[in-house]
Length: 75
Length: 256
Image: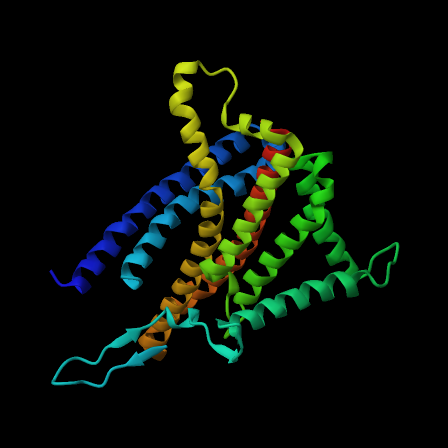
C-alpha cells in the first residue's frame, strides 16, 4: 500500500475517537440539564463545573484528532 | 486558500483546500544568536501584540482609579475579580500569593486566543511549542511549589489514603503516570482546540468561496455561527487552562 493511502486511512481511523468526545459532552450536559430542571436555584452554582467538565471531555476526543493530524502531516 | 485547478489532461477542475498553510511560521526579522535561530517571527509579533493589549488594559484602565469605575476600568476590574474569585475558590487563602501568575496566564492565553479570531491574524496558541512551554512551566512550578511546601512528604500525594497495601503496588504507578501526563493534556487540550477550530474555519471558508455566489450562502451561515462558537471556545479554553492550573496548585499546596 502506498504511504499516502495508508496515511489517509490512518487519519480516518484516528478521527473515530471524536465519537467518544461527542458521547461524553452529551452526557455531561444532559446530566446538568436533568439536575437543573430538578433544582433550578442550585444550577447556576455548578455552571463553572459544567464548563470544566465539558472542556475535559472534549480534550480526550481532540487527542485523537491530534493523532490524526500527526499521521497525516508528520509522516 | 481555495485554488481552482485548471483542467489538466482532461481531468475535472477541482478546488484545493489547504487549511494548514495558515499555521506556517514566517520569519519577519531574521536573527541568529549563538547558532540558534532567534528570528522575530509572526508568532513573536502576535505574542507581543497580546502582551501589549493586556498591559494596556490593566495599566490604562486602572490609571483613573475612580471609585465608581468608567468603562475601561470596569473591564479591568471584571477581569481581575473573575480570576481572583477563581483562585480563591479553588486554591483558598494559601493561593492568593500565586494570583499574579494565574492572572498573567489567563489573560495571555485569552488575548492570544481572541487575537487569533481576527481575520488574517495568526493564532499563537495553535502551536504545540507555545502551549507546551506554558504547560511545562505550570507543571514544573506546581511540582516545585509542592516540594517546597511539603518537602519529600509531597511524594505521599501518590499514595491515596485508605487503600489496602495489595492495591498500592498497582495504584501508585498509575497515580504517578497520570500526574506526569498533566502537562501533556494541558498543552494538547489548548493546542488541539485552537488548531482544529481554525482548520474548520478555513475549510468552511473554502466551501463558501468554492460554491460561489449561488450556493455559498449555506456554508456562510454556518461560518457565522461557527465563528461565534470559536469565540466562545477561545474564552473557554483560556478559562479551563487557568482553572486547571488552580486545581493543580491546590493539589500541590493542600495535597488531597
